[in-house]
Length: 251
Ligand code: F6R
Image (cartoon, rainbow, N blue to C red; front, side):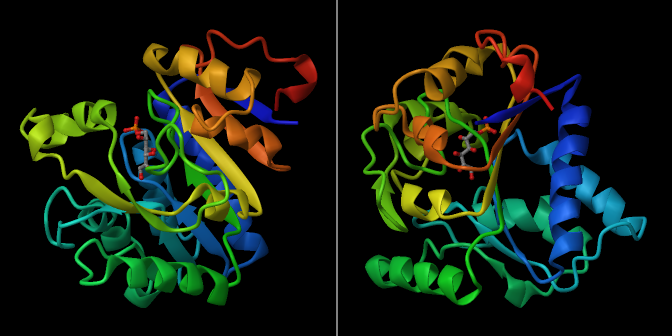
């Protein structure tokens, strides 16, 4: 059963998600956190930075693997996901850079890069806690509608709708958004031992309802989460507006 926590604010969402990450790190100091970019996890990264500064969380042994990266953007490009992670988290916590992995969107042989990324995740012992956001079309990572559920890391063509959504970071122009990305597949995500899905805003309410209460269907990639044994959804009231959450599923 999926568990739900309704957050009062973005700050509260960050706080609750940070509780889960901190608990994971306390349980397994060299564990593997799966991380996401985007707007929704920002308060989580702020809160983790605060707790690290306060000596409440120790990142010295933690390893991280991110979900995805644009093809063709180097790590120092301000819109690359590597850059995002540096600016919003890694530069502020005492984590070993060698322990922070993202796919390399500049790799000459992207197929090789995908295999290497899967091998790294496996060598690190798999993902203990995966943080996810959800796209308006139900994507998780860059697994767009129609994605095969068993795929591991692979190269994807980014859906038009996603390029439009992400255009806000590329001077408002969807054409400037890279057309491809390297993404962990749903196979990698589903292999994570725990998943926390963060969702905010009224614009995500319908897709969240379809994903969590509708049929499990590759046309709504996030619907696969219904098949995972340990998913916590942290959503604000607006995002959860279309879901009738059974009392027993609330935490
Ligand atoms: C980001 C990622 C995406 C986002 C999703 C939601 O690494 O994999 O799936 O989680 O697009 O983005 P926001 O949080 O900006 O609404």
